[in-house]
Amino acid sequence: LLEFFKRPESYTTSSCSGRIVVVDSRMPWERRDATIIFKKHAPISLDEIKGLLKQPVLYRLWLVASGPIIHVVTLTAKEALKVLRIAREAGFKHSGVMSASRKGYLVELRTGIRLAVLLKTPNGLVVNEQGLNEAIKAVNEALIEGKKRLNRLLKALRRHSIK
Image: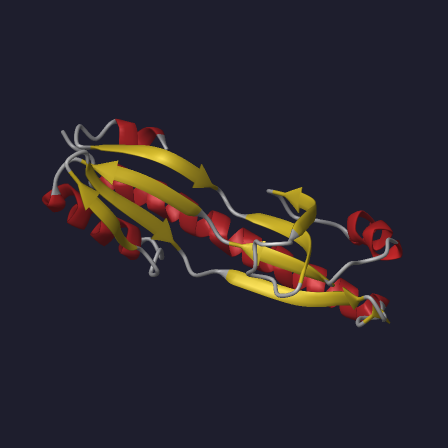
């Protein structure tokens, strides 16, 4: 994030480096009536998740991996387009300008990395231990891919730094 602060026309407002969550909700993207049961910004293990599966659920229990997201405010449209070009070069393909105001342009940088696996319903588990192991392996791979793209973004920002 420091690379953005080195740019005279950009600064970040919020960010997440990517995370894995277990959420009790109707659907994995819903926020209303959703409860985050577990959250970690690093790879997870089977033991961390197995205990959660013993608890009753209200809706459905989802294992979700999300890639990085960074909100950047730029002072000019030209800088917003530069930031978007650099981000897309680094694999943040689902990025765009969210809003424009007299304060500047809000640019959201997203990779598009997202993986959701249904683990449990009120009727019981929908995955066995082998399936859970495979799901954990997949969400860890998704998280690591997001971290790689974040590293590529850092390198791209340094290559395109303001001298």
